[in-house]
Amino acid sequence: MTKVASTGRSIGRRGVRGVGLLLPLLLLGCGSSKVAQCNQLAEVVNQTQGFMQEFEAEIQTFSESAAQVKNLDDIKLAASQYTTAVDKVVTNLDGLVGDLQSTTLRDEDLSQFRDEYVGVVQGFSTALTDAREAMDLVVQVESEAELPAKIEESQQQTMTAVASIETLSQTESQLINEVNGYCGAAQPVEPVSPTDPEAPADPATPPAEPVEPAPSAEPGS
Image (cartoon, helix red, strand yellow):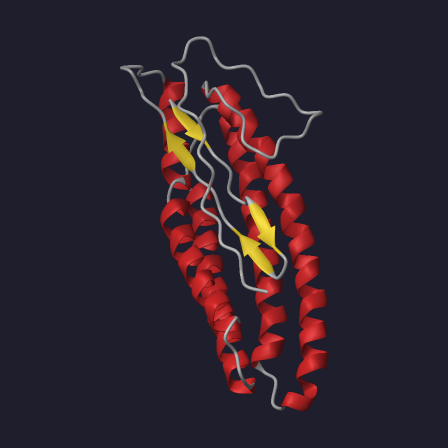
């Protein structure tokens, strides 16, 4: 069987932290169609592990640069590092959407989860694009005189994107818990809504390994 872990884990004050993954479970010789399809879905989503680790490293570089800025050129360079990192992760998220949409799942419940998950990933992509456009306001600044106003505008736009990603993260965690329960996983993904209990594990499937937190990346303040 295959187990699901969270994609959008948390948000920094000026950017986004993290995209999660589906973690493989021990098959233990189980060859059922449901198990195979759970693993098939996990294999697609697991690709987030690689590109989110890269995003995390790039955001760390941005944070370090932002902490050492001394003039307008330094500020614009740090901001451009952020926009470049976000452009790359958005491209990867859009690729994930395509891969998910092309994944054929005969199981109706898994197919529904996949479709709902696609909507969440698309939402992450849109919100990150909004955050990138907000930071681009700083990249395009032409003088120190206009910098304070552009930073304020950028922060306001970014907070809207952050709020959207936080909402999407809650939705995603609930979906992940549901599919983990359906696929026989044992532990919930945080954050879990107190009103949405985890779906019971399928008694015909082997137990899952614990869900590990997804990698996270927090832009500097």
